[in-house]
Length: 330
Image (tube, rainbow, N blue to C red):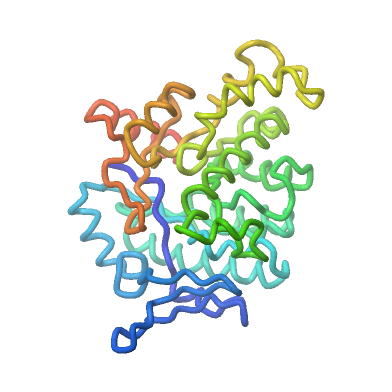
């Protein structure tokens, strides 16, 4: 099984952004203090990273063996995207991340691959770091957030998208929790960890709409973008989005024809880590399985070790798709 959705926490990144962290607090069972991962004012409590597969490669490989995962793609922890900090600091953080991740995957090239972090604050620098990370370090693509400080269809980002086409490598889009890179936009999401399931679904659906309706796929027809968690709420909203695009004044003329928006959606790639069989059925009914790839959020709070939830036939399809997305075929 190939797992395209697995995050990593790197020791070398701790403190890389100065006062913003990232900072790891091991907690204290004697006093009841929970472990905590801090980035700026955002605190993720109750999640232990050190001594788990997130940071211990040997533990990761043993857990992969137990789960039947042959190959895993490691991407940045969304808490450390740091898309709104000073661009110079962000560039240094990205380089540190990519150097450290490249060393991890180089030690286990038959089991692990890596996605680079880039300083999206400066798209030109981001494109340069993508070229370095792929061309020099051997990483297989780039991961960015859904909120990068400007809309995903902003013309300034075309230089980054163009670099991914030039490198012939995929872009993986995954949200960060609300409040990581600035003040919370909605305090209600602080309850029930809602930024991790409801907020992510909103961010992913908005990212899909922006990439499609905003014309990114038309401007870069060879660009491969994979969206985490099946694009969040996209499968439930696709029909409404198609109707809005066809009837509202901002709808591009090319997307007003029946079926045009659905055809654009099928140009994206979709992470099958959606939570269960009903959500997966809705996703495949909307976008099919031609660009569906397996993901687990390995070792995370919502880890799901059967990414296809659909038996051997679907699992084989997901693996074949992942090989195309990651350029693993001869």
